[in-house]
Length: 80
Image (tube, rainbow, N blue to C red):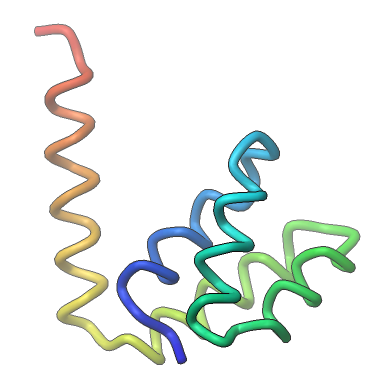
């Protein structure tokens, strides 16, 4: 089942250095099929479809919360 943690994790899939951690998170949430789909994908198109599925599954409140957290992290990291 998609959770906020797995939703956040799947967005980092393009970063190959994080994939082991991402797989652990997804498998802990019983999303083994998602891991298989991501590993067998030949383009980022499948990753994009999965991120859209995750957004629908977790709902708008989680999506908004994750976006707000990402924005805060970017603000901290940005020189200014």
